Image (tube, rainbow, N blue to C red):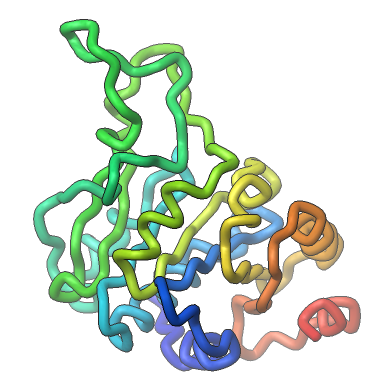
Length: 232
């Protein structure tokens, strides 16, 4: 597993001071699949948890590919051993809805938050979410909501909330969630085409998101002039 501690420490410093009254909300996204946003968000979460006074939460918002917990469980030497699962919503709110609605065997409607759990890592300094997608029935889908209730609630119980969303080339989740984040960090792969990244920057701004940084997913990579302008 790649060690990005030094790079994430630089990003932590570059983002500056967090809000004083609640936890900071930071979303990581890439324009294209495979550019490493999940790896970067996971490494940033690890660094944030070591420095934080209150727990840090990493929300895996890629509802179709839940991999963050799996990756951490496979590397206990880096993240510690996983603890028992807990509820991932402090007040029953959720950042997604289920279509059609989920009902239990008795026909009672189940709130979407019941399918969102989290496991603690690093001695309960870092909580990582997991959507129980295997519980869905045939024809059911999870849909990201364009509302901020869940994020506001979670931010009051965390030092930092890090959100890992799917790449923009296969989901519009980033556009749905960007308005509720304090910072959006874009991850660009070593050999990524700069065109989609420039387009993503424009899209984020158009929905009211705040692009606060760009991470090049290779320390030795020298970006082209167009990408250097994007970083600036």
